[in-house]
Amino acid sequence: MAAMAPAHPYRILLVEDDPGDAMLVEEALLDGAEDRSLVQVSDGVAALEHLRDTTKPRPDLIVLDLNMPRMNGAEMLKILKEDERLKTIPVVILTTSAASEDVSVAYATHASAYVVKPVNLDDFINAVRNIDAFYRDLAEHPPND
Image (cartoon, rainbow, N blue to C red; front, side, top):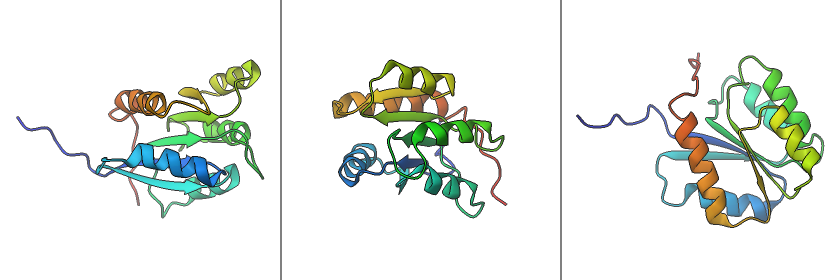
């Protein structure tokens, strides 16, 4: 029996304000992956606007920086996880902060993984793939009306 193709490309929302980091992460996530799509926004406000726009497809994974202008990643994660429609989307924190308080707050707010930059790109890809493998089939996909 042949494996079923996914109903849509695996959608990733990258929330990152540093253009260089965003480019590296995008290249790492999309390299050779025809079944993925990625949208990048530069802060938590833009991310929430994107997520709440019902004309845009819901991402299957969010990769989130903590240190950003307008609304930082910790604030955005808290709001996201309080939203009934969005709280099941897995979130991987990718940040320069290794502070134990930031790590604790991220996991207390239901982040799926916490990866510190600068990071070995292979380690980051493996962390995201592990999250993918766990959540891809389990993520709830509400119908797009």
